[in-house]
Image (cartoon, rainbow, N blue to C red; front, side, top):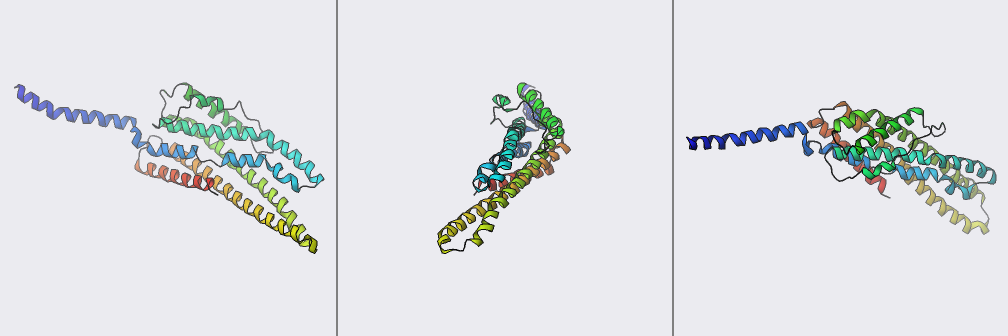
Length: 289
């Protein structure tokens, strides 16, 4: 009888263990089923480019100043003060979204981040600014997302899930990504004005410098012109890539919000994998020459 009981146990125990392990995998989703969420969140956090473009926007006057007339210089200095006044707010938006994506990655099972000391990176608040395009809805979204991050990180990520984070954060994430897209367009427009100012001087002055004594000066001016034109061409490409990347992040997060509870489904995983791949490609473009 004991022999028959032992045989039954040998047959039944593997089945019970299989059911228990399978049940656990279905309940938690497991790290494998959320791999694409982690990769998308990581790629979003590491997109890069935006901070560099924000600094370029802040430092516009330093590049323009040698080419400006005294009258133009006065207005340029006023614009310089305005840009520097809003720079920290622009960077605060980026830092908050990066921290959100890092937290999302951690919740999806990635243990590479210890974010407890990043709470200090969150600013005290934004200021509405008609000239920069920051509106009250952006300020409200920033406040909402910083509160969510503070709550999640301070709790040690206990009783939190990817689904909860995405559901609670999506509305604010979308508004702040919209703000970053608008600000990037502002940077782009400012750069266009700078380009017209600087290259325009050469376009006007070089044709009138026809004396033999000006030959060397004209040659140097043409070389400088070509260098500046190449610089602006490269920067223009960075603006285009940054806008593409921010749009991809917004679309990917929207897809997660629309498919809560189905993030481990094959189709959603495929979509997120594609977004993550595209973001990595854009990041490579932003970091290249």
